[in-house]
Length: 243
Length: 256
Image (cartoon, rainbow over all chains, first blue to last red; front, side, top):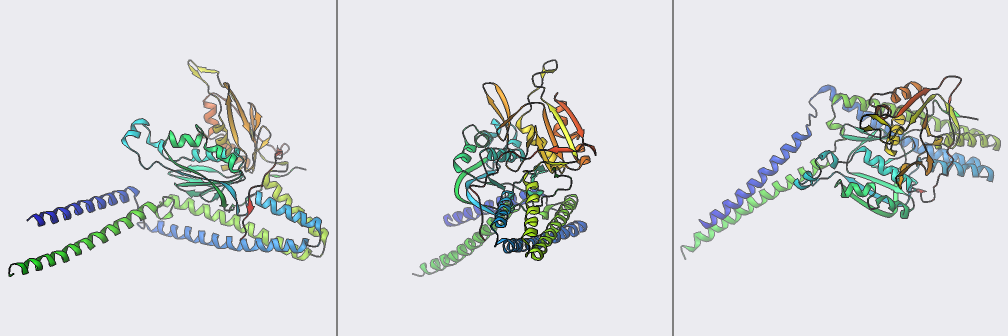
């Protein structure tokens, strides 16, 4: 009798746990509101998007190869002439400065995420739960601070920040360079670590995000950061050099 | 002895049963955790969960990017053939290199440029009394960052504020010290009125600047002075080159 009781209690407990788990699951999934595959046009569209993305990636690989070839040709054409190879070096430097190459160096890595452990206490403290998620403005401002601290290259979730990069909010996601990115955000910056550290100063913007708005913020310096290149295009249709 | 036998048998079946139940529970838990992980990883940016309208804009975006990339690809291919055919002549090679440099300087912001676009004159009317008890608050660094963002989003190719060219690593800060606020662009002090010039498609830029939901209209509604001028054929917008230095001391090209 005693044994049976124990067993039924254990099994009962497990069942309750499992049911809770399943209930949470079901609620999360309905919360996402997935209507995947319910609509024919949507599926066709989805296919076309995937195909275009694939075409883009393939073309990008070709472009990579072509750019390497171009550099070789440039080298070949300039190797016997110091004046010309200086020009060639200048082109290389400017390509780097424009974010058209992957770069490495010393710098900082910032991880920024929504507050996932919203407790009754903190809700009472800050009545607006909206303030506990990362906004486009937060990223815009942190990037602005990094630039001020002397960053030479910045990326947010592998999107390279260039002159005409737009960081904007698009419904529930954030768009950078026209590409949708979501939390958690990884902001990398290459530059002098000592000055970049200033971005995480007490009472600074990032510090406030952590200690006042209770977002999840992690700040680290690193000796070896890799930042990917800008995969978009610089286009000048309206502007021309003014000589 | 006789009574002991069935007892052992009973506990044996019990052991088997509890092991089976244990295994079943364990595998269920595993499945659950896998599920949790999957749900956690399902990111909202994935196209699996997008609706028709979003998918259409997504498709249009990618198609446009693809076209741009094709142009860039053709451009690189053209340059390759040019270098190949002009290899023998140093003079021609120098010309090619120079034209590449000119293109890069245009993108870096290190040349003066001109073209169609708009000029925005934004006057900070802080501390004036709008109506009884409502006092206009100062234009902040964030306001200017958003104005710049809206212009780039409308396709601006180059922007300057009070003749400070906005380049990749330009920052805008409102420094407050001793109750005096100073607006700085790349650590250069600027003062109101802010003259914001943008080169790009005139119609797009103008509609962005006059948009009801745009930052500029919001600032105007909040009591600040706003004037938007568009360029004309004989009076293009002229934007000066970036006068600072572009550093690349800490970053190096990654070797593949």
